Every structure is written in structure tokens, then in C-alpha cells.
Length: 109
Image (cartoon, rainbow, N blue to C red; front, side, top):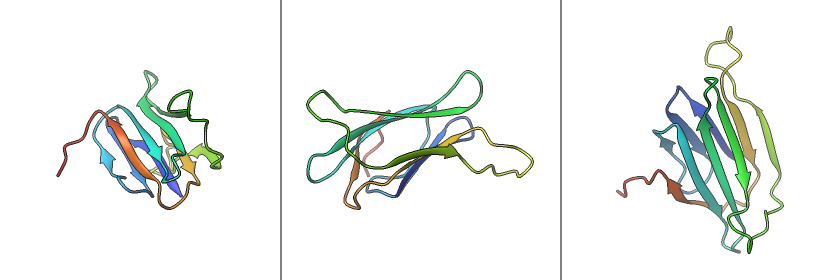
């Protein structure tokens, strides 16, 4: 299961796939790509209202959206008295999916 959500006002958290990491930005995008060439574009951005939003799309018109189950819920708040400020995107993608085309670009090790 791949999870994506925002933290603080400048951190995007991605977990559950090759290339997952913490990304220090308030406007992030990337693609998920499977070995069978199934692909999905992802976005996570900090809104003017002080909350995080997430979205998905086709990578291009030649790649239909994969049939990977997707849910969006409220991300758990770090403080139980605060309802939180980020949604949480869950993607039930194949285990061998990798994160690519990350923007803003990250430094290669």
C-alpha cells in the first residue's frame, strides 16, 4: 500500500514503494510506474487555506489510469485535539511499482 500526505507546511511524505521518501516542498508531483508500464501521476500541494490536497491523473493520453484501488481519508493528526490539516492518499498498487519523474527534482545520491 502506497501512502501520500502532507506534513507541516513544506513536507510531503510518501511511503510504500521504491523511491518513497520525505520531500521538502509545498508543491510536489511524481509518477508511479509498474513493470507492465501501468502508470499514474500524483500531486500533493499545500493550499492557500493551510491544508494539504492530493490528486491523481493519467500520465498521458496513451496510458489509461490503472485499476489500482484508491482511497482518500483524513490523515491522522499528531495532536489528538486537532483534526489535522492533510488528506491521506492510499493506493493499492503492485509491490514492484516505483516512484519516478519527481518534481521538484531530488538530488541523486
